[in-house]
Length: 403
Image (cartoon, rainbow, N blue to C red; front, side, top):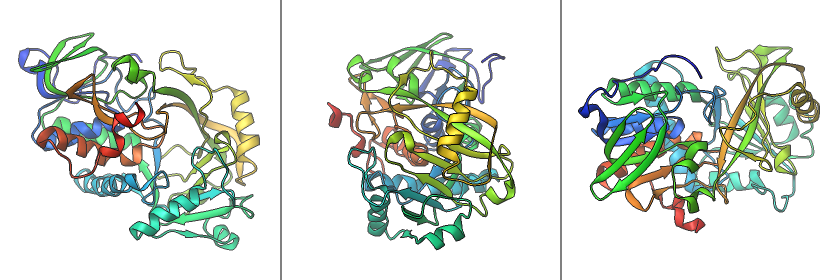
């Protein structure tokens, strides 16, 4: 990315500007939330990012993310997504801008679980979480599905679950708002600044960038696909980065895909590569139907990833995965984006101390399902730094489960 150095706050021009209670490295979903909540708790913050967030080089771009209260990935996530919904609604009031759009959401799976699939029998798993927490979730008949999403096709022999409280988060907007609010409260947010080294010591942590040398009592590493460059090698080898492609296709009736009339669709197929996410269109968003797939076979890194989406990729995705599942979607693609997932071996998060120091917290290797939880995770990490404990339980995301 080219352009002048931009900041939301002040720039490091003297010694006072190069030290803080907390330095946050990486200001995407997780880092922006930590910076915002830490500043709210009275912790002085310096935020650093090699680009200008929200940007298109990491994991937070592509406008929107799916959110679900009934989280089939496991009940340990429910408190975080529920609190995140509350926090985004609070931010909406402060900033007078919509962040959470509860369009409802459909989950489509095979009738019988597919052994070895990344998330086996996802409708049933989602239903168990919903039942345990009193969340409205039901398995629908084909006529009920047709009423909710008349353009969906090919689901008649599938299992389809529906959560009316699910929906979308305006992801890029949420990151921008949190950084703006953090800066307005006194945080220093420095963009186009690359962190080269993070070195903890007995009295604090030193952070060296291509522009300055910083000192802090604590550091949060929320660097997403760049994480492996900053952490211990034995931890870095646990992480893999995968290239994911997002498409916006022209549709014959854009109004029929709006968030006020269409739920999102998560279609979990026989294999990971048959997954399809179909997003309703929020007001003011790219004028096309956002649809994405997922793949976990080919790894990459943020420096060498191919950010160009070829015409062959577009045609293959449309013909093989879109046409069988959705009517009225034209082959013309109005926009594409390349997004990076940073994956752990078990597809669950890491939020824990790193670099053999209780002054450094690793977070954000979220395996493609982290944004919906990010506001509450940021708050919990900020609370941990401020008081030594958090109101939500971070123990399921400890690093030692993978060692």
